[in-house]
Length: 164
Image 1 (spheres, helix red, strand yellow):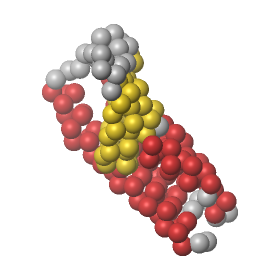
Image 2: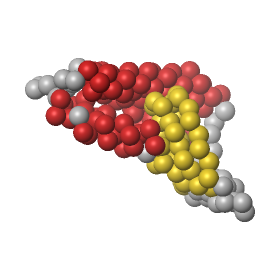
Image 3: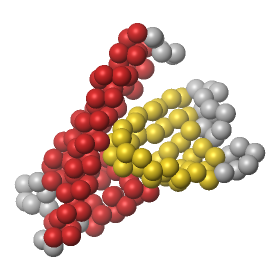
Image 4: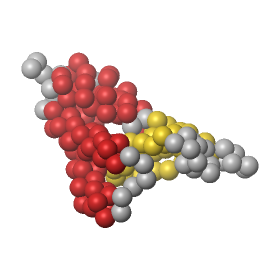
């Protein structure tokens, strides 16, 4: 395997592992204690379900990163699926969706009076999903360019997989 391809996959795997650990810690040590202290709006079961879903995605990110590091076929599949889930960035008046467990470079279009395009680069973890009305004053939609690049790299290097 060429060294550059191996290095790129190791970087993606490491970022997935670290991002998953960060996101899991965020939910375990910040979000859950906050939810226990101050009940959130809406049905509690749905809020706990959403928190649980993002915690599962965080664990899957760690596992996918490990399997990708080992060049296992399941690692390539899980990593590709998780990168795909990190592509959309949606904050509308009735729907909010954002998931990140690694590097993020969002290019987003906000639709206020000045119609601005925003570029955000960060590292960390985040998970939001809400359905309802009046969620945001500024509807925004975008894509995570890093997730798109990582997805393309993972899919193009899939042939480097070890036989499981």
